[in-house]
Length: 121
Image (tube, rainbow, N blue to C red; front, side, top):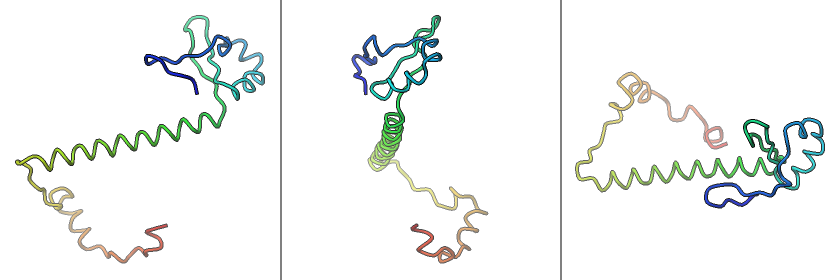
């Protein structure tokens, strides 16, 4: 992938194509995008589109999802550690969280209604 410097992408001039070039020669644009991302410029708005090959896109999507999950777990760990360090912390009853009706439904549920095989597919 391209380098990032000072929070901005850096790329070479030969990676920029106009939107009309991309439209007229889309096959060529796709071929070039397999080598390096192409930045499509519009006359009025500058670069507004990026063409990448599927493997690059998939890699970016997977990495982004992993980073989102890591941020979620980091935030949860921070909240837990802050809660554990708080001397004013108090517990909340599950019934208060779920509400009386849902709590009663949960208590009445059969824990063996779902087999282990179905639960841990």
